[in-house]
Length: 286
Image (cartoon, rainbow, N blue to C red; front, side, top):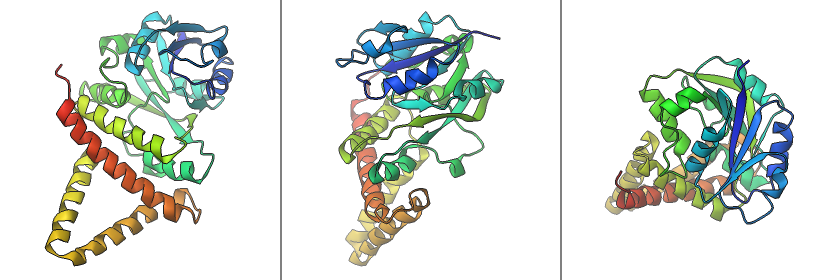
């Protein structure tokens, strides 16, 4: 069996890193942690594990981790995640150059529960083509190096950009639905808003304009135009709020979701639009 290396990037993850490493230590895989400059006890909690430290963003850290890895297969997961006990075993069952595992939310309160369907792909929304995320992913080291690794200019959306590059190159991507990691959502609206903003900016930096972002911008453009023409169209806002609840309530099933789902929807909308504009105005030239 090919040797496997697990590469993780971390930055101030002392609250979650122990649970992650406790699971990974039970595997026979090589574990490499790349620290981006933590100022808490993250590195101390990685005793007995190879740690590479420096001022790296996530893309740089992962590329450096792969360069230091000895495995023929590289598995990725993220800080802030907790793999299920058979995660790596299930990931390696699927024979493909790249394998996308799955994930589920680990919400601790009603806000986090409502945030999960805005960030993760829910099981009933999995399409025919599920792109890999670094929360749960494996790739042959040779293929990773051939593809040039992650774009070092990106600190967010780097896995989405990489997945699209694989897709354009015609690389077969396998899907391991039972290779599951748990993901801890952001704790409050402020940190969630910042996350949405960073994703939107990074998508533009990566040269990606997601179709749903185009529809989002068109949606708001038409709404404000119609309201200007006829104030009765303000009723559209009411229907939009109702829609934001109906599409995600089945994942929450709590009356408090009638408040949080619309709040998160509108926050995500504004941050994505603002982040897209910011990205277009500040995109660096490659």
